[in-house]
Each structure stands twice: as C-alpha cells, then as structure tokens.
Length: 514
Image (cartoon, rainbow, N blue to C red):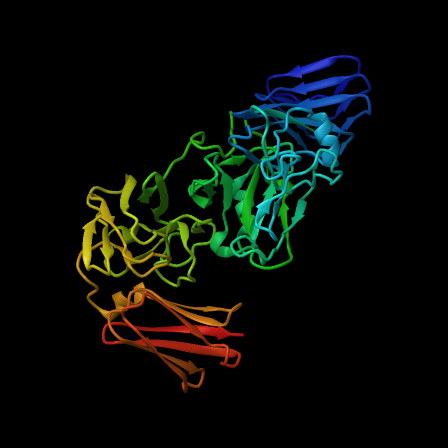
C-alpha cells in the first residue's frame, strides 16, 4: 500500500483496515479512530493537537496497532479490553503520563470494586514486599507507569480508556525485590507500546540478563482461570516465541536479585495483520513438537507439568528460555542433569531422550498425608514406540505411565523430590551412573544450608573436600530420608567438592560457600 501524508482537521477518519502514512497530524477538532481490526503504520512523525483526538480500540480477541517509526507528540487514547472482576486481567498502560485518579475519572463506573479493600477499586500493581496485589483508591494520584504491570478487573468485561503519550523508544521498568518468601522475585511488567511486541524479542532480553533468574527465563501470563487454580499461569518460552503480546498486556518475570531494569526494546514492536489475543485460556493457537503433560489429580484439583523433546536446544541440563520453573504448581520436574533444585513447569530434552535409558527425571509433588492422588499422562504426542515409566521408589513399583494411571495415598506428606521418577525403562536403577541422577546436592547461600535430596539406595556418607582434596567434614545420611538439610555455617567461605558415596551411588558436586 502506498504511503501518504495525512492531516486530519475538522473531520473524523475511521480506519477498519490497515493504513500506512509517512507523516500524520491530527489537528484541533480532528479525530482519528483505529478499529480493533486495523493498524496504522506511520513511517515518520506523528503529532496530535490539544483539541484533536486519536483513538485506538480493542475487543476481547483483537487489538489495534499504532506503529510510529519517528517521534510522537501530543496525547492519544487507547481503549484496552480488560476482563471482568470474575476473571481479572493483568494489564499495563499502553500510553504514558496518566495518574490513577485521572484514569479512574475517565473510566467512572467501569472499574470493579476491590476485593482486598472494598473501599478501593480493582486496579493496582503487585507488591513483592507483602506478596499481594495493591488496590488503588479512586483519588490516588500515583502515576501509572509504562512497562509496569497491574492487576485489573472491570464490572462486566469491556474497554478501559488510557490517555497519554505514545512511547517510541526503548522503555525500561525497575525490577522489584521484596522480602516475602516465594514472591520476592516476582515482577509484574507489561507491554508499554501501542503495538504488539514479539515474544521472541522479549525472551532475548531475558536470556543472560544479569538480574533475571535463568531458571525462569520465560513470560508468565495469567490465563483467566480461578484464583486458586495451580495452572493459572500460561508459560511463554522459546517453543511458543512466534506469539505476539498485545498492547497493554501484563505478565510476570522472575528476577534473581535486587536492582536492575527490564527493558522493552522498541525493535520488539510488531503490527498484527491477523486477530490476536491476550493470555486468556483456550484462545491461543499452539503447535508442539514431541511432548506430553504429566498430571497430578487431587480431588477436583488438577496440576500439570510439561515435557518437550526437540532436535535443537534440548538437553538434560538448563536450556535457558526453553526450560521454565513453575510458579507454585503442585507438580513439576527437576532437570535430569545439573539441577539447581528448581521445580520446572516445562522441561525440554533432546529427541534422543525419547528412547535413551541412561537417565531419570525427578518429580516434585505436593500431596498431603492421607490424600488420594493420581498421576497420569495427557496431550501425549510422541512416536508410537515411546514408553515412559513412573517409578515409585518408596514402594519399588514401576508403571507404564504413558498407558496407565497411577493412584497412591501417602502416609506422610509429600513435598520436594525423592519418591517419584520418570524413566524410559522399567526396573530399578542398574548402575551407580544411573542412580546418581536421582540425587541432588545443593547449597543455599542465604541460609548456609547444604541440601541433599532424592532417594538414596542405602546408608550414605557425604564428604566435603577442599580444593586440595582434604576432607573438611563428613556427614552420615540415612537411606530412609529423601531430604537431608545440613548446616554448614561453620565452614569457611571457599570452593569445595561434595562427594556422596554408597555401594550403589557416587556423585561429586562443586559447591561455592560464601
């Protein structure tokens, strides 16, 4: 389509199809409306006079784009669809410079009443210090920050009006760091642009970022399920990186330490020629390689974890932006090799591991004592000859889990790894090289605790060596326990080797104590 110079003065332009412009000016008394099905690409500069109007619209499954190559002056309006208070949504201002008080006035009667404080409205950021959402009072003059995420809910599902300036530059947001266990690294951010952004480009920002936990280098989007559903987070990783994130869409990223900035590069902006959607469940097309999901069912509560097998970028260790830790699910896997004790929502291995027999995958489950639970496979998409066995190491039971469910009732509460493993063959571990894969040795810097977790085959000795090979400490481990917590606060800072030995298992792990 040919580019042109467009100036709107005393009339309204309604655009429902794509349009390209070189320079665009909305003069006083002029109006430009971009329908949810349309986009406008301005290859130079855009200006909007004080009494002019430039409005972008959206609906539940389509969002307009306004792409500006040059600069933008003057305020515009983006009408961003937001789910009802029953479903709730994670959003971010697609334009900047508005206070919440002005936003509340512009959307009077549209924002739902708060559930944390019924005197406030259901709109506010996530507070890592308290581990809960904030809800603003209608008169709160706190600025709405571009790139920052907010939880929001409307009275019945509809658009909320954002008024402010269009960002055409790299846009950064400070990464928060709180004190609440389980939440202190949780950061709610969001697309700050009036265009879609490429998930692949955002994942590239996460990859290697010094303040992003590389075990969680993925985008975690709210999928619109009930608040207490453990599958409430939809994980976008490099397997789904062709997706576009809608204007004003919020999502979670996980930081690794205090400080740092998460930056949305302007180069990540895209226009969507076809209808696109937010993260709400059941509304995104997906394509998958060889894969399956392992489900944990406890009454009406169903949790799941996913395993993928790909030719490139799949390994038994950490594959950054492919493997992704879980945000609180009752089931997950630990990495088959070089695990750091992180429970994974998604683990990616190589296609060779569909049939390899020299490894096992530890499962982390949370099941209360006396509670009946069932493990099963769903969404099975693997070659017909592929078989995976579930090993119950406590009862020494192997189940062909790709064909059969396994129901159990633990006599003591389960948490962490040690009882259940996935393998491609039946039978018990046949060699030390296989058996050691089931045991993790970790050092927790914050508490100066040494953690050994997994099913030991017999009474075990753990020797802590310095770099000269001298034994500094010796610890006796009982085979009846699947998790040992050892206080090493008396050990001087330095590099050590933890050597685990019994007649069936042998493992050496380098530890840095500081």
